[in-house]
Length: 193
Image (cartoon, rainbow, N blue to C red; front, side):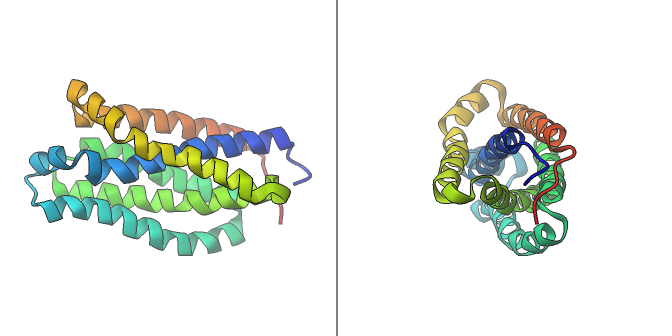
């Protein structure tokens, strides 16, 4: 990547690791840590709550197939911009869902957006750290997976103080800020071929 300074690419990778941290919060919190609260809020059976998690997970997995083509045609910057927007939109809308169908649609939107992030992170890391790719992607994934840890005890503690909707609204706000900073830093970045 000749036209983009390495520090800028590394900054984008760090911000992407933070986005991946939020992916793992979303993947673990619903239905995991917030299972009982969601069951009560939407008057669901256990399988109904589990469907909120599977809606995210199935779409997340399926999206990765399409994202490979998207990255190949348009590059990882556009993939993160599009996916990040969908991910943020789903994360912001979910705590406002007043009914189960809307909540389910929000989870699908969140999963679709999150699916765009992983392969983009892999691609940009290969660009920046081709000689030490395995170590770099390992560090990024470990940082991202800590989101799953935060989606348990810390999120439950926040939920007990301010409620699950407010806890997820604050999480979504922080995600939106990170995504906006990512977009600002990615302006003018052209991925290498």
